[in-house]
Amino acid sequence: MYFSRTFVVAATALASFGRVLAVPLESAAVEVRQDGEVALPDIDPSMNPVDALQELQSAVEEAMSHENCKRGPKKCTLATARVRKDWAVLTKRERKDYIKAAQCLRSLPSKGPEEWSAAQTRYDDFVALHVNLTMSVHGSGLFLTWHRAFVWSYETALRDECGYKGTQPYWNWFADAEDLTKSPVFDGSDTSLGGDGEFVQHNGSLGGARHIYLPSGAGGGCIKSGPFKNASASIGPFNPAMDGLGPVVLDLSDYNPRCIQRDLNSYAMGKWYTTANLLNVTIGAASRTHRAFWSEVQGRYPDQFLGLHTTGHYSINGDNTDLYSSPNDPAFFLHHAMFDRLYWMHQILHPAEAREVAGTLTLQDRPPSRNATVDDVLDMGTLGESHPIKDMFDTLGGDPLCYIYL
Ligand SMILES: [Cu+2]
Image 1 (cartoon, rainbow, N blue to C red):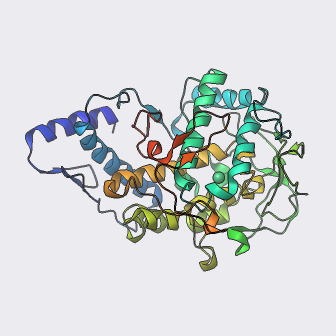
Image 2: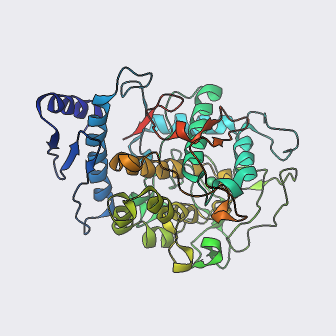
Image 3: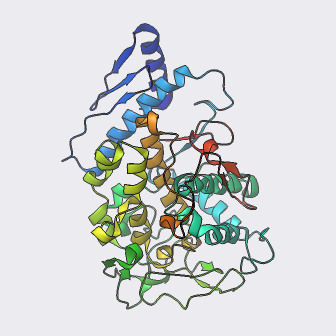
């Protein structure tokens, strides 16, 4: 269903009905009330995760259409918003344009501060800022919105600095839960972000702050095929969880040229990218409050639950298991766009929770710090404008965000 058509249908419905609106969909029904409360869709938990996600997307589009009717004239509208899409539905031409822009950013010189001398390229500036802020933008009240701003800045840099005309695509985890090597993102073709790493014998990874053992896949070494074959990094690693990845460096002045490593890990995909885990954080128990969502998507490591965010990192594995320098892998941004899509879905389905913040200013509140507030500024360094958290809640807010997911 195209968004614009949904919007027209919804606008007509809103004009002709009263306080409560019920809009029938093909397979799920979502009821939207004018007071901003969204009645959640009823989705069969035995459905496969790809179909369940599609049902959620339909419900989100319906809810967003109703919300859009109430907006006055705005800088950002559904007609002007960047539409972020699944990598799998992009044309070959669109994928190649994105790959070309990402490679362009990896060839432009760094604009970063001198003390981060390991950063050679403009792409490295993204890695360096992420490294520098790691302890405040993970497991904290900044986690969701900082990463939203980070992906927005990356998408904007691709456009403004590398002439990219498209939008930031996402990697649909759930479509690849059975075999990651067949994913259009990772199949190693010339329209992928490169394939698996070369096989290197190693003993798996210790994920979730070393609570969760993940067996090795068939890779472990440098990316062996596709546009990012043997792609290199200059920064890190600092704290990789894959066995054998290293040696580690100490800081951002430590220039460490090497290849990016991967070990595509279908074990993690199959175990955690399930319908139950998807529904839990979107319409289930862990979706009821922002805090519950924020907490659950980050995993419950001592319970052997990696969570939807970390699972993506450990499915790509290799350099992606390093909490600090994981953005070295260009697939980071497709993973984080999908994660941001999940947050976006949660916000639209739970509008009363959409502008809430949970957590403090430090990773799992270590060292103890005050609660984050909507006025805390999300530092983007040289990557783009820094905005307060409150500017990052509404992806159609227009200052600066203006995008949706399809
Ligand atoms: Cu991160």
